[in-house]
Amino acid sequence: MVTELLAETEAEPSDLKSSPVSLYELVHRLQLVLLPQAVEKSTFIVNHIDRSLALKTDEDTLAFIVGSLMNSAVCSTTNGCIQIETAYCGSDIQIKVRNNGVFFYSSPSHSLGHVADAARKLGGSINLYNNKYQGMIAVFSLSKDNAA
Image (cartoon, rainbow, N blue to C red; front, side, top):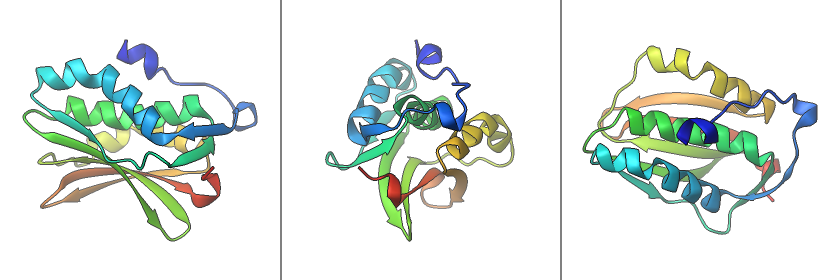
């Protein structure tokens, strides 16, 4: 079921369908799909997204990107907490997947190449950060122009 939801789209940027997408609702649906796997790993997933935030973008591609980042966090975590939140940084909206206590080095950047490609289709980018106190943070940045 997770594999079906996160199946990569082969759409070209011109084929993308842009419509308002509630980011909170999208993350909530992804949480429900990932919940059984998270429970098996004694891991919590917390949705801190503002309920009023909507993005004008292709919903399937956005679900693939955010879902892949969340799935990677769940697969990498045992007895932890994964938090999904947004922040505004300059001219970008950042969707952050924080994973406490997990530190990635070079391997995740290789396995997330297809996610970075999808992010570029939406005009965004993916960055991974390690923080001594907060663990791994995966950030999907997208222009504020995509706010609905």
